Length: 56
Image (cartoon, rainbow, N blue to C red):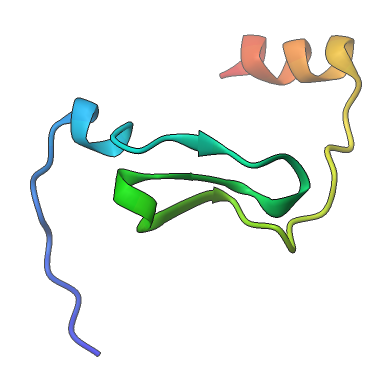
């Protein structure tokens, strides 16, 4: 498989954004699985998630 960089605009990434609950979250016209249905559930509570964001 050959991987080639492709320049896309941020608005293209959000094109077709669909949060399908337990069936996953998709965008980029269905080509990007932001949270696939087989992804495990979130582990952090809100305070822990905020701490992670603050460290970034």
